[in-house]
Length: 408
Image (cartoon, rainbow, N blue to C red):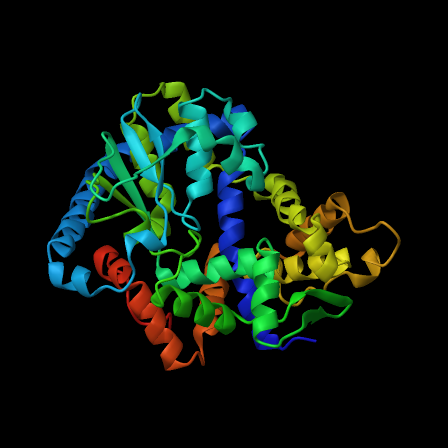
């Protein structure tokens, strides 16, 4: 049985994953009167957005360019371009390229490019399972084979607080086992066994601290870095490529809407995407979120370490609690799922929706719980490992204006 603190740590990052999932698979309103009101509210904000964000874009680009001209920091930086591989979503027709930054909205941008470049219907694009999006959008990307090659379009780089990005990567890839072989390899190297739940094993007993220590150590040794936690500076060649826009994951909705409004696409497409930005429909999208998360359990490597699907659902349930969709005092409905073949997407969705509607939390309560969980994730982490994080992401902290100290 895992500790209360570790359960909070490992499940909290699911909040970030779920935010992206809800954001990516959101449905716009079906009620015409409500949608008309919503569109009027949205359009009324455009001028304010345009005026205020122009200053924001200028400040971000100025800060980026100023930092890039200070060669001393770059020359002393230990992470090199050769350790990672930059990929860009690109549309010559729309004159835009977006650096593909994993764990910072890259899946959403894949959907946007499918709609605006390939002409895919929004309903179809947003219905593609999250784990299949990048394969479908593969033809819309390009790489930069040389260090000083330019994009030949307007460039967009997306940043995210490195502490938050690392935690999100751990939850998605190690705790929820999308990188199940990596998790197994790390556990084996540390002499650790399976992660145990109330109903049996599910995954490997690798902590967030173990993960951070491993990925930062190997990166600072000059070895290859997985793009899901590679520094944005090296992956997007921030100081070599000319960027016109800097999006921050922390203001992703606002920033992305602004970029979309600059594109030469039809008003209908802009409206469709805007509806998605501002729609609610949390309950309507829950089935898609659960289905996407549930797909991780199908592979043979996954079944070998988590044969009990109920154990995996218990992990998901704890994540929904930390996210603020389920009150912490609502117990997991264990008795409901102890029957044969009862653990499936439909039953799981029904259970989650019931828990959500029993005693919903306010947006302020959800935000507080998410933040506290991120803070808890770094409490007690050795200074040696924190120093490695600070060194690995030194240029990201500096160029994008993030606090170099752990969340507090």
